[in-house]
Length: 308
Image (cartoon, rainbow, N blue to C red):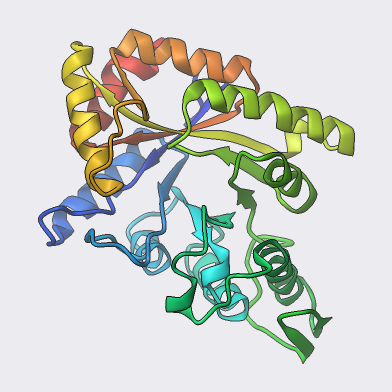
């Protein structure tokens, strides 16, 4: 969705279910409604190992793509080091073909390597493994016969079909807020998204940094996706909104204090925050209601988006 002031808006998709049971009719209604309302893209996260009932994003996208015709689908972010890049490249190519070129790939290195043993991965050389995995996927997506002799993977005339429908491949959107992560996004990616767990003020600082790195690299901001995931609860009563937001995020992140994460706001306050993000260089904001997804989407359409 492109607002009157030029800011593009995406919406998160229901993915975690506290009742541990899927409501297929609700999922179909939500995603088709998001598309009919004009949202540009729908987004998921990845949490393979979690106590929460959380759908795996790639198989979920394949299902959602069959229900829609226009809505694009992104994951922010796939923890790349816990995936085999050859198999991941194949799966993403298939989904891009099945969705008629509607996939956006978010990639991240993750906060730590605590889960690596469960995936049979050594904890060392995290960044080197991550960057090489990206090279492996790009080679398989763009080369008829891929050759790569790396530290972790060797491709010797490797052929993979189908290639992604989008050329040269699906947009790669990076996460991370450290200086190396931001520079890596500029060097290897097609865009960057500020994390939802990072405050708006911190994200504004990161936006300024990455825009500077883009200028240093001679890259145009017009060709680079700059976005922010915004966890939110919107209500005319901000204290009520904060209660709902904190409860939803505490469930998502395992019961820890989430009182400072996301935005609990009245509609007018949210409009102000979106304006501040746009002024700082964000071209896109992922609106991520934390609970009450359908009601929050309706409220956004009725009371927020008309003001933008």
